[in-house]
Image (cartoon, rainbow, N blue to C red; front, side, top):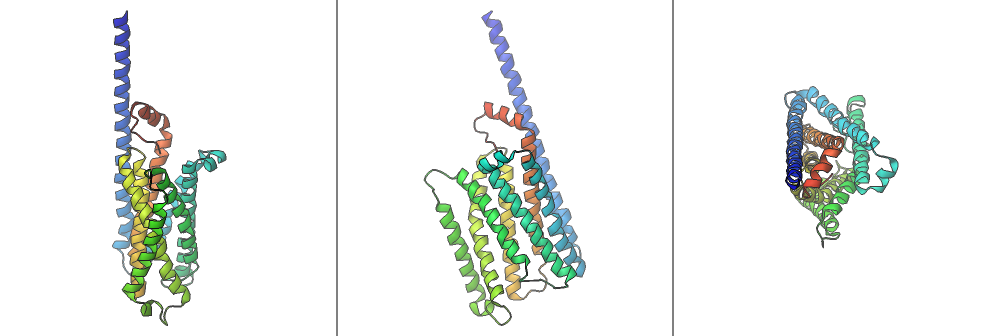
Length: 302
């Protein structure tokens, strides 16, 4: 009798092991497809800019910045609709996700305002414009997301060090920015007070978000499934910062063609969209994740 019971238990364990293996293969397959589709999407969207010329290139640059922001915002809303209002505001991760989505909508609005200046008002490279305070406002929502996620990952004893390091990095980047181009060049007859202020604010905010983006990217390497979400969102912010740096450099140096910055922005927005889509798939397979966590404690949830 005991032998039969042991055989049954062994059979159950073998079946569970086989199911776990299948579940892992399924998740890995979906994750790999998402990465492939992301790379293909980035190439296809940016090819419109790379292989076009003149005014058409500028049109594609502005329009794709708007279009690539929309999928992430829509997927984010779909994810939040799966949660109750109480769950959203009581769960720190959900509040961070809400903040990220609000930031996306704010930057979508900023991109639309920028396009309005260029296409409707006919102002080439409208800097500064009303789009800039909207972009700057969006930074705070992205910042909330990154600092909250960092607080969830930070190691014991780190405390609020990351906040001080981030702010110091932002100020240092602004200082280097000023030294590189020279105070006389930035504060010139061609640049009013608003232009000068914005030229300094962008590197400060970019630098402040650069450190938590990199640390979140570093912490993500020890996670199995949800890590793709954090990796892609961290990479997106790094891409935004590279685009801002290139645009700031081009503006100060008087470069006429800055459409290339749209390539970095498109890649960043698409990375967020596919990262959120991965989160959506994980939520849809919640039972599978829980089952894997029960058998492997190292597997972390989203």
